[in-house]
Length: 637
Image 1 (cartoon, rainbow, N blue to C red):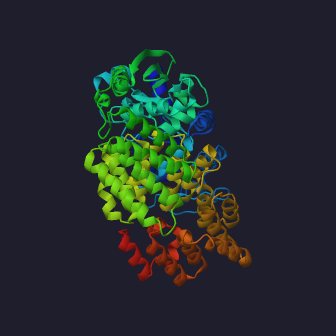
Image 2: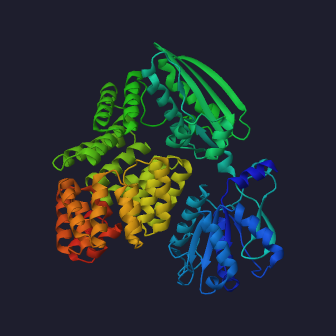
């Protein structure tokens, strides 16, 4: 029973509130959500009476999200209003419109997910939107496969006979329904804490960090395992919690941690695998090796972890595109440590230099070529001047192609090529094959999932984007970048309340992250909340995102002088802000000038143009022939 209770605790639980008149649709939705891995509490007898009040209150208090089906009938129901208020007050409300009825006073500030055209399909965009909203409200990942899928006999024995779904809702209690839930992914989930550097030289920390990331990479290649991404593992580990607390925080079954002590050409590695439920050690082992054996040690640790978790051993196999030259590997690790700081252009160029050294020491080191490509593309995107963009992106594409030639099955190589083609050449068509190949090879890597999701939504593949970003959030729940990407995707899909929730979570994890506040401002602006939007824009730390927002909001509020002042400051940023100028001009109603700014942005290769067809700020110019020609040339139409 303990295993069953732990499995249920990891599932989001939803309270479904609706009117008796709408029961048929509610039942279809409840069944769909259950197949997606959601525990659903819903109502069969809306006139339950006072005898059921305690049961209803318990269900509401224990639910992770409250879905309210607004309709002409439910807006008149006292039960539904009370339940909606409980969800609103707990910040767990997921409003859904099923017939276009305006919600009652007190709930109109929340934009509803539109279910009026849903015909029962499980993979419909509306269902993806609801799943994403549940995930954001509950802070629990939604399973990516139906919970009623067949499970092996071994899984059934290990997890118990089944799991219970309590069905309760807007007024009455039905009872319990049983089913067999596949918890294989949860049972084989692991987070790897940063291995601590115990070397006398603190500068050797890059080596222990590199070992940690290599182990994550090795284990994530195993389809049997769910490996939490580095950003979330590092963030949770920094709190100094016990293994059991850490496991609960990230909802994983196992924790791997350890230490690295390097002295000259020898290294001692201690690895410990803990049971997440109890915190007790499953096994612990110390490896004393020469540096030349470091690659064998990584494979050995990965294999032992896979065995202890009853997983397949493919994760112990060497990754394609690696190196056997220790000096090249060390240069690569130093470059990765510098790149991951994301501090400034100096550190990014220092990382680029380290990747160059790694390639010089081993010209067959495909992973270093891929990393070099990502570094060049990052420098172009973050710091490149208009006259530098072409050469930087050309170099990024060349390096990525070299990586692909050396190791076609290296996910990082395919990702680097797709990213460089997409952002450098503004070529959606050319980027499609490498992005899809990277996704197929690296669907256990949160970074690959995130970048594929962004590509997919820009390319008009919203359902795929939502699927990928949900999995990225499950693997990397404490990474502010992942939540920001989720917010960007929902904003592009016009799901503004859901986007705001994701962006709020991003800011909670990193109050200084760029473009999150500005995107919240964009969402508020699209919802007609102009004063609130202006405040969000003002909180944005990055000029290129803050200034266009202020210019748009002040203009809408009738403050023309302030709007002109913000626009002048934006123009002063130079050609790097041409796309943002076009957004402002489009919202100001100056359509011809907006098109000219977009054409100028195209001439210099501004990667902002990849947002063209999914940017609500450009809606006023989207029907013009010039706009359609731009979008078609990039491959967005």
